[in-house]
Length: 121
Image 1 (cartoon, one colour):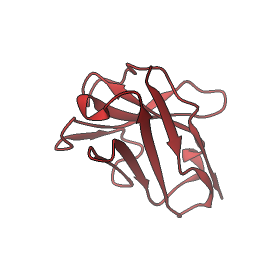
Image 2: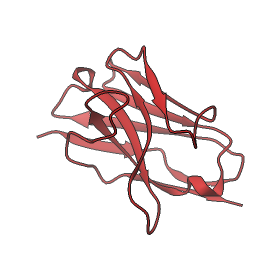
Image 3: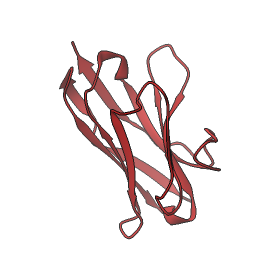
Image 4: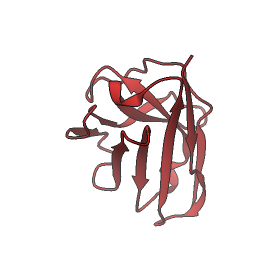
């Protein structure tokens, strides 16, 4: 059974940067389009960014466009989220998951534990 493992979160000041990683065991991520999601306290999980299987196509939520970059290294079976110019509103637990397509924000696999990102003002 596939297990998604997110890492790279932490505490950062507003304006700072973090790079999240998503690795998988038990499944080859290159078979899927992949997405990053986040869930802030008291809010529903929301889509952040998606990337096609090859990495050629990406899609972003308006709230992170021009600040976040999703990428993937299929040889390493890993997906990344580079987050720049972080804001306190970006504070959330971040999750990755396979998605049907870059524009369809629905997780296909079991959710991992996520990684906490906290942005201080």
